[in-house]
Image (cartoon, rainbow, N blue to C red; front, side, top):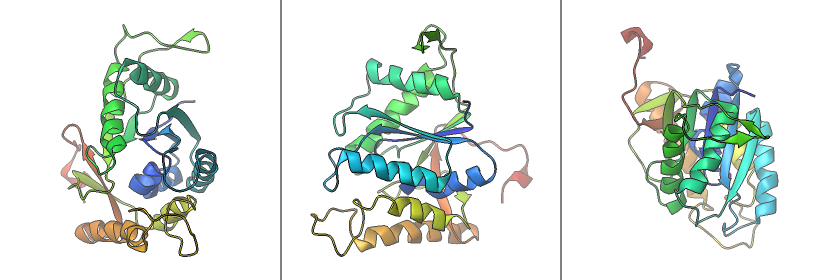
Length: 238
């Protein structure tokens, strides 16, 4: 299955938090979108890997994506090396996305920046014909995405561009809240973490609202680029 957009996250819920509304909007526009989780989030303070698997599946249904896979890298300990790059290369060649979305270039959680660089490096290497990979005993063709964009997570990184996601924040928030073990729940006795506060869950909306304010819309999500963003005409900019 060829996808238009493939979004990577170091942990289940990274994609939903970083660009869930953008994905929901692109799906509504008829684009085929997939999500690849690098780890199962097994080191998360709350819940278990098995529970996160179910939560990720529920979130995928809410967003309406075409496919979701988990590479089961070691949460907290995966590295940017040949073995991990090759696994991502196989995924890129399998789905042949035009656009890749991945973790923030720098963030509070060490897996985010590391996952960002790992996926970005693999996107380049996937276009090299002398790197040979197979899938189902068949040689894969080289494939390099046209662009790689990085969504924004904990840190307030200044975006290179923003996407108007007005009308899609409810779907984003529903997909985030599918991870019931991970976020604000006043009834739980589980330990508190930086992402379990009401302030954090509220910040998802007020960040999008603020970015939307800056471009004259209700909500927006921000991204950084690895090269200049290009348009065909001044009229493509709003």
